[in-house]
Image 1 (cartoon, one colour):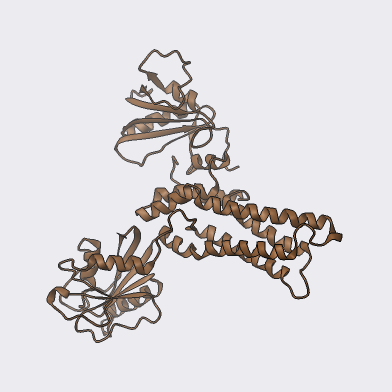
Image 2 (cartoon, one colour):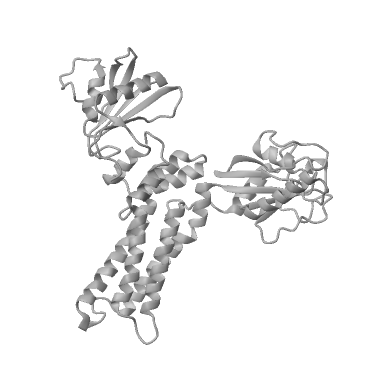
Length: 448
């Protein structure tokens, strides 16, 4: 256990700074009693002084020992029907940092301690309110900056991936149980499951893990975002296109070639995708040391980009060669009446905005990362690594069963099946070591 579950913890649950409202969260065995003693109710209720009505918001007054006062809304959520599974009280006050700190200090003086990062969600995990995948989805949902990221995170919080992993685990458990029963009766051989049935079961399991892994790259890009690099020869309109997509004059635009000499980046939302746009130096041979370094950085950015926008104008005979990089060829300056370039995938005017929506559609379509609605999707590298480990173990078990000259003894197959199940249980947190939990929850904000 990372922290004592017997402690009552308190933290401000809303972001730092001033706001219309701020929330202080208290959780633990003494949460209700501590919160009740902090306030003066605006009615003469018959309840005990250290109790609060369950799941009912009440209007009350808060007064600190230092004279800070406020009118607050207090809501108590008795265990186990609360976010953490323990008693929880949320105090909603005006969003002054002075008021919120005074409420926290009052709770600490009453016996609570300050919560560690992610400790409320950790308690929810320990108390079985969520599994580890859902707990990680809470952090992803908080960090989401696009609708697509929020949707992917909520699907995991809602249990879509949990159910898929759970079904795999149950199928594995059944298979392992039957094989272990066969081991207990060695004279019978594969008595409780025939080699043929075992092969079919392993085929089904490997198909399901392979399907999860097939979408893992797409899911990771949704969660972590993508990088789109804009390249082309000098003065073809790269920086103008960059500014048009960003919606602000971030890159310097002049008629002089070689204006951009370093990478200029900006994060934008393109159809729900978190895209980091990168404007680069024009691709040409140059004697200028600084510009030459910019060209080299441009080439390096292309190597790690998820998509490259190759910008051309009417005067470009052919687009720059990019090898096998995923790319779109974008013809610019169409407002000048230029003829259609035969290599162009999309034609735009950064000045008038013509074609920009078509370009955004093409970027989203080419990247092809939108998650399937209500389908389990892996977005987390940890999850993908463990599913891959389970898939490899299942593949080894399948090879053992299909060995020429007859299947290997059940004990050899069991080793691989148990390794696969261990990997799945580490995803959900059933086998997660304390070091892993500490690492995961340390990135949470305090108060969540």
